[in-house]
Image 1 (cartoon, one colour):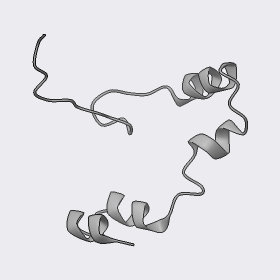
Image 2 (tube, rainbow, N blue to C red):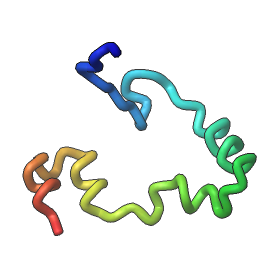
Image 3 (tube, rainbow, N blue to C red):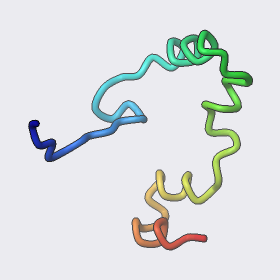
Amino acid sequence: MQKIENIILDYGNVIFMIDFARVHEAFISLGIKNVYGFFGHRAQGSIFDAFDRGEISASEFRDAN
């Protein structure tokens, strides 16, 4: 078995562009209810937004309650 050394995840159009409309359609086809509420950032806690904007450090984000 080959050893995997690194895994890169990109959920925000950093490395490759994501077609969010296609993602929504795929979720709907899988039967997920309220796709926009499930997939959107509207209900996201403010700590995530602050971290995304660089207003808090990684350690502050990690240690947040």
